Image 1 (tube, rainbow, N blue to C red):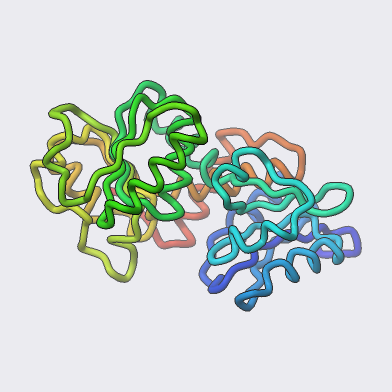
Image 2 (cartoon, rainbow, N blue to C red):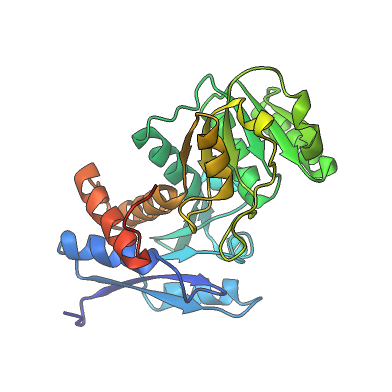
Length: 291
């Protein structure tokens, strides 16, 4: 029951109407008997700082931030976590004494999801598809978790080069190696973990992958798709057709939300409860079989 003691959390974004975050957080609140409600807030472009300051003034416990505000909201913060500062994007605002502290739970969420699925980064050779904001965050995660090397393949080789130069400089070692997407045939004849960090294949534009050549997928032992809708993308199908394992991004979404909830409420969410929330998410999306 909502009353005068109910704490409010929410997500700001534009668009935000189809967010899965209320399912995650309201399920957690119900299961943990917390007097908390989570709602989405559509914020107009250019108003992220105003929205964040208003949320603090309204005594909101915490705020998630989604596109297009993950970088725009940073000037509203009084503190920023080290990983979020490196990535240059925050998705979780945690209430502290004089304002909000910003965190990026997307990448810890991805890592936690990978760990539960038996996908390792330490010592791994990675092919990273894309060089945009999501790929940038993944690149820092790979460096932080001690991947051996990361080949960054992008349609614009200049963007891949810029990303590689920035990350290599910030982490103090050469880990990223830029390549043009069309040069995938020049990859070493080895087996890789491939992380698909572009929007190619996302609903409603399904049925496409950034690389269609079966020869590329014969080099992939595991494909990790950051898209979660659809739950089986063309990229995943191509990986599996060549005998590799393939995963989609719904568990990343789950765990980024769980980590935010843990930060706001100073609790630890068990794997058993995480599984219950995951089932609630699948039910909300109408997923019966993940393929």
